Image (cartoon, rainbow, N blue to C red; front, side, top):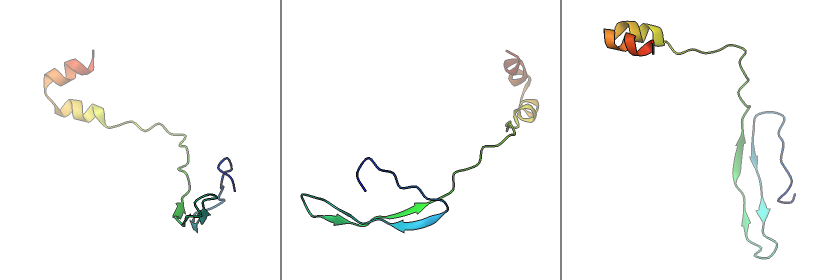
Length: 66
C-alpha cells in the first residue's frame, strides 16, 4: 500500500495496520476502528423553536417575526 492508496472497509471492524518506513525502518501499528457512516435522512429535523418563543416574553415573539 502506498501513500496514495485507500483502505476501504465494507462493514464495521477494528483493524491493526502495520506500517514500516522505507528509510528509517521504524514501525508503528495503530489500531483503526471503522464505523458505518450515518445514513442521510429524508426528513427535515426542525428544532422546537416555536414553543421556546411562546414560553419567552413578548420581546422574543417580536424578534422572531423580524
